[in-house]
Image 1 (cartoon, one colour):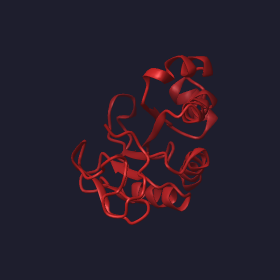
Image 2 (tube, one colour):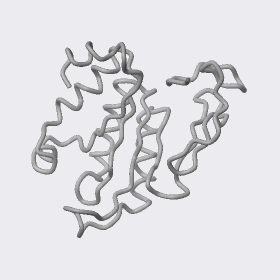
Image 3 (cartoon, one colour):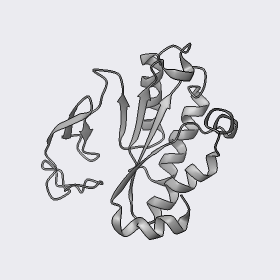
Image 4 (cartoon, helix red, strand yellow):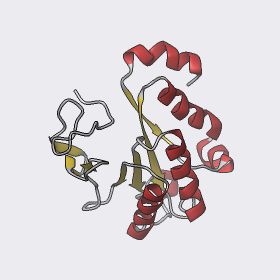
Length: 174
């Protein structure tokens, strides 16, 4: 989306999830038939307009799973804002990548660690049962939102604050 598009829709858009598939221009060109820069501009543009942004990366073995690639993604997100949640999703075989193995659990755990090392407050591992992370208060680590796969059946956030320490919790809560 363009900056003009963001400005037009920002009064009506509270939150958005952006797929950041890679940090490699050639990957975007060959695999996505698109360009990386507009995706990066979308993330920074929405954040600048105070739209809650979350980023998802589908980690594909042999495509976008190197340490350097994952570090670049995590550092970019943290550079925009350490409050931006990063959802790291496990790849499963399908359609055009039928011969590619599922993402090894250790790769996702490594990406999680790299995200935390980059300063991201909220990093989640997805598409891997038992690895989904609850949302913890960045100040005191109290569980704020408990997740079960794709569902968040329990939230203790009240008035955008942690019920234990009173810290403001970034996000959109209604």
